[in-house]
Amino acid sequence: MPMLEKLGRAILKIFFREIVIEGPDRLPAHGPVIFTPNHPNLLIDPLLIWFLAPSRRIRFVAKAALFDIPILGWIMRRLRTVPVTRRMDAAGQVDYTVFFATCVETLAGGDSLVIFPEGRSLPQPTMAPLRTGPARIFFLAHEKGVKANIVPVGLNYEHGAVFRSSVLVSVAAPIDTRTFERTHGASPAEAVRDLTGEIGRSLEHHLFQAETFRDRKLMLLVERLYAGEATGGWAERVPRLKEFERGLTRLRKSHPKEIENLRRLLASYERLSAAYSIEEGVDRGEGRGGVRSTVIGVGGMLVAGLGWLINWVPYRACALLVKRTGLNRADAATYKIVYSSVLFPLAYLAEGALIEHWAGWTATALFAVTVGPLTYFTLRFFEWRGEIAGRSRKASAWFTGPLGRHAARRLSQLRERIVAEVERLAAHLEPETDAEKG
Image (cartoon, rainbow, N blue to C red):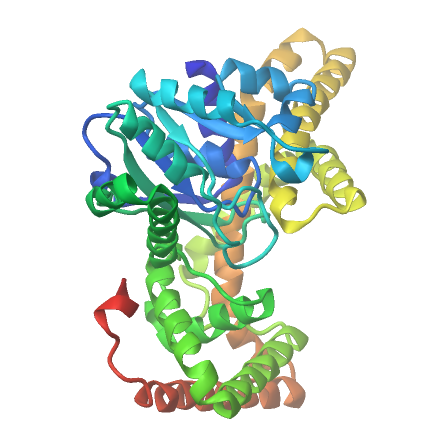
């Protein structure tokens, strides 16, 4: 099992450019924990918990149907995953007695449990209504004298299915369950319902959400435009996006026309930016480094070009398989990792065999030793090239003729109008109450 955990962490480090853990000090020092993350990204979500608590013994709860999938079922059994048959998957009534008993035994033995209160992974930018499973498990354990902490975990993906994007794992403080424990003695159903609601409120406080993917995309854009050079990385952006989310929610009913006008301005900015390939955020200056960057770029391109050739076939095959399968947002990232875990090693074996045939065992051994570092260098090099291109893309628009200069001026004007509209809307906001702040 430790080997599988290390492999899972290594895969995620390759898939994501940045994994930031926020608030790990909030985790209880001792005792079992019921982790209750949101669930937007199928099998990627549980893997991230290994980054959160690598020293804890953790068991996951997963739908029983996954155990029938070859290889994956074997892995889940090795990880001692707890199967659950959901009502939506069953033909009739479901007896959860064994499932709940297994979960309580897990906590009683000192292990922690990861259960997704939404009940399933959904391709949507907001949480689904929560199920009562985590609360029921907590009270069943409490009745047996097992003191478990409930810790909600917000998984904030920049672009969940996009290779080399970022994710912020935000750990909430353990829920204070004393009030719910007192209520449970007189009204168990009410206590379960209220504790489930508290889990939901805690999760919402640690998540950036939007009603639609379109709203989410526009909020990402307005935050970049408004923040300017202070945009920063994904971990710095999420708190600001949360502020935009709260403001939009509060203003949607009171100022619908102004919100719709802001949407139109953002949509115009987005279309114009895409049409002229101009940086959609803020100009951070032209390419930096001058001759040094050019020399590094040329030398790096020679090496990265070889890495690109080695990895092109499995990369394109993986993308084609995901596209042909027609996966939704919740499944795409998981299957990219699954397909890549098979296709890339097979491609390296085939390429190694060809090298041996053409150049002998010495060249094959050299290939085997360098293919990993070369692939990693290629990833980082093209990310670096992308950052350089992003910094210079806006400036380059000024040299595309009158149309390009007009587009750049129009974008600058639109940005000023968007920032002014955001500030005007912000002036209408009353100070948040303690309840709204969470």
